[in-house]
Amino acid sequence: ALNEIPLWTPTAGQTRRISHKPSRYGRNEKLDQKISVHDGDITKLEIDAIVNAANNTLLGGGGVDGAIHRAAGPMLKKECASLNGCETGEAKITCGYGLPAKYVIHTVGPIARGGVGEEQREALRSCYRNSLKMATENGARSVAFPCISTGIYGYPPEQAVHEALATVREYLDAHHDKLDRVIFCVFLPKDKELYLQNLPLYFPAG
Ligand code: ADP
Image 1 (cartoon, helix red, strand yellow):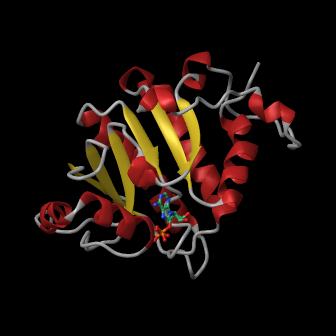
Image 2 (cartoon, helix red, strand yellow; image 1 turned 120 degrees about the horizontal axis):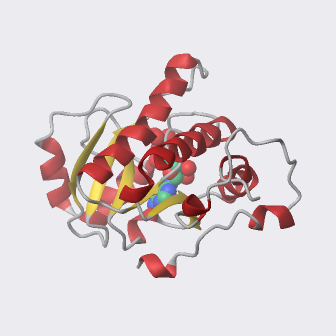
Image 3 (cartoon, helix red, strand yellow; image 1 turned 180 degrees about the vertical axis):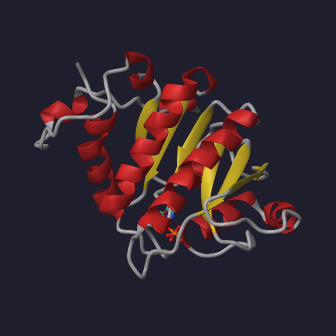
């Protein structure tokens, strides 16, 4: 459950060897109480909503999508099949079925195997923004994200982390009253490091 997932604290970064670039975001103590970095399987999280890095068909695939469908059971695919797919950058919501999470928010990240341009960057930001919007519109107050597009879709994780953190920061600035927790569910040790290194830029201390 939510109270088993520790909060990230903005001072945690200061004990790590990180470069302290100046942040363009100010301190906001309200937001510090809402961010976690959790390493592990997103399908195990007992929270309101988990985000799926799906594909345009919403009919299941590999990576985190495959794991979510396996854990949720066949009813999830059935509901997904009724949704008429999903555009890149958009998000659609379903029940969680066999998952401990109440909802799954399916979003489709950009394919970036040919490189990252403004189109991919904006699509990735849209995924985070529209997923959070879908969550709040459905009353979900705790949401976990996988590292969208950084697996099979080939978006460089060291670039994707900035889009993820900036978009979440901006959404929380505007809608902090609608969300209790945003969890960055990292699966690879390298991603955990990237998030811990970069979080102080978007959620700075002092
Ligand atoms: P995409 O097609 O959007 O790149 P992938 O599923 O290939 O999506 O990868 C997205 C991220 O999800 C990768 O960082 C991958 O390591 C991670 N991932 C894979 N399985 C899980 C899981 N069970 N829980 C959380 N993250 C996962």
